[in-house]
Image 1 (tube, rainbow, N blue to C red):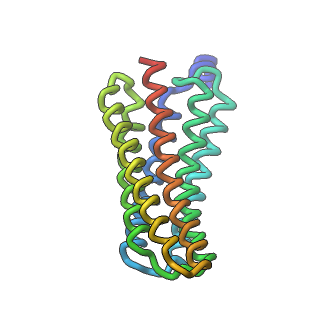
Image 2: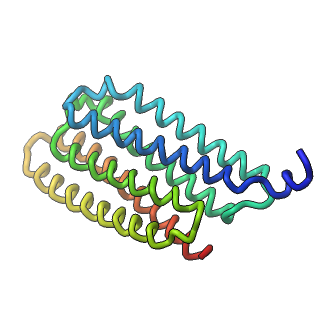
Image 3: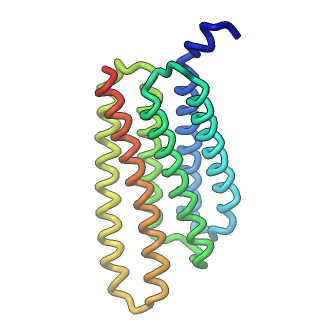
Length: 209
């Protein structure tokens, strides 16, 4: 490897890794929708979801490794680190919600989980599109539109959670309330993290355009 390659590595490496991460995020969101719409027991979904979460962890570690050995990066190191971390958080929330159902013995999904899963899936697709646009920051308008849509989806998730908790607290089963409240909130947390990813991407565009 020559001195130029050491000092100025290919800018594509980080964008490639982010796109790989976005692909895994969409796969996890698709699996979540498939699982919730099938009404299946979460036990069957957990191993595959865990594999996706592990794959996301691996890419996150690769991003940090690349940061530690790269002198000049296409984006600020703090931006790369923050984006990688929050993308990993989204995956953690998706996988965590399924694991929570398994641990709590929630054997089937309900309408709230299905609605949340769909909002997560739609958000993941928008984030994937925005991340692909990061290679050329001239695509600012497309990124802005996707960021706005993710924000809208997160607001919808807030509404779904609010109505769900209101209905839940009208029941008399305290144990069920605790279980479902935790699952609902973990799913909604995934949409929160999606919004954070979108806002980070928006900030990157503003700084570098």
